[in-house]
Image (tube, rainbow, N blue to C red; front, side, top):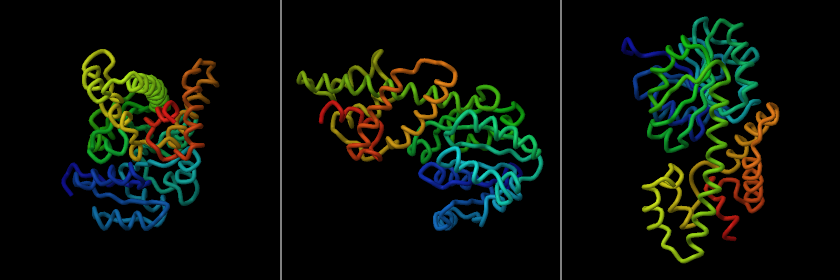
Amino acid sequence: MSNSSKNIAYLGLGVMGYPMAGHLAAAGHNVVVWNRTSAKADAWVGEHGGSAAATPAAAAANADYVFLILGNDESVRSVAYGDDGVLAGMRPGAVLVDHTTASAELALELAEAAEAAGVGFLDAPVSGGEAGAQNGVLTVMCGGQQDHFDSAKPVIDTYARATTLLGPASSGQLTKMVNQISIAGALQGLSEAINFGASVGLDMNQVVDVISQGAAGSWQMENRGKTMAADEFEFGFAIEHMRKDLGIAIAEAERRGVDVSLTKQVDGYYAELMDMGGQRWDTSALIRRLTR
C-alpha cells in the first residue's frame, strides 16, 4: 500500500455497496468486506482482491474506517452491536461511517455508542442511485463532528462527487429526508405533466428536450422524463425502497409536528403501485397510476 492507503472494512455488498467498495479497492486501499450472504463477499474478493471476514467484528478489527450500507435501522443495529458487531471489533480512533438511509434516532444512538467505544462516527446517507455508485459520483450527506468528517472525507470522495458535513450527528439523515421528500413531489408533478402532454397529442420526447432547458428542468426530467413517456420502469431506485425512505421522513415529520401532506399522498400512490406488483419498478413509475 502507499502511504495514503488505509485499512478499510466495508459491510453490505448490495447494489450500492458492491461498487462503492470496489472504488475503494481500485484506489489502492486495503479492503476487508463482510456481507450477510457470504457468497457475495467471496465474489467481491474474486473481482477486486482484498479479503472477506467471517463476522462484522473481524472485518473491523484492524480498520481505520468502517463503512456500513445496509437495509434499515434494525439491520444496522444487528451489525453494529454485540460481541460480533463492528463496535466490539473497532480500535480506538477509527471512524464508523454509516451510509444506510436510516432514522435520525439511530444516528444519534450510534454516535453515542461510538463515543463510548472511543471511535468516531458519521451518519452519511447517499444520493445518486446504483448508477452513481457504479460511476463514483454519489452525493454524500454527513452528520457528525468536524474532525471525524475531515478524516473520512478523502476516503469517501473515492466514490463521491460531493461530500458535505451538514451539522452534528443525525444531520445527514435529516438531509436525506429532505432529498426524498423533494424527489417524491418532483416525480408526481412530472408524472402529471407527461401524462397531460401525451393526452393532448404532444411528442413528449421533443417536449422534454425543450422544457428541460428552462425553469421546469430537473434531474428527474432529464434522466426519467423520456423513460416515463415510454412506460419503461425496470431499472433504477425501487419503489419498495422509496417507501421505506418516505416512511422514515413521514415519521420524523410527525414527531416534530411538520406538515408533509403531499409526501404522505405520494407515499399512498406508491402503495397503490406496489399493489399492482410494482415493488421493484423505478420510482418514476408514479405515472402508471394515471395511464392504467
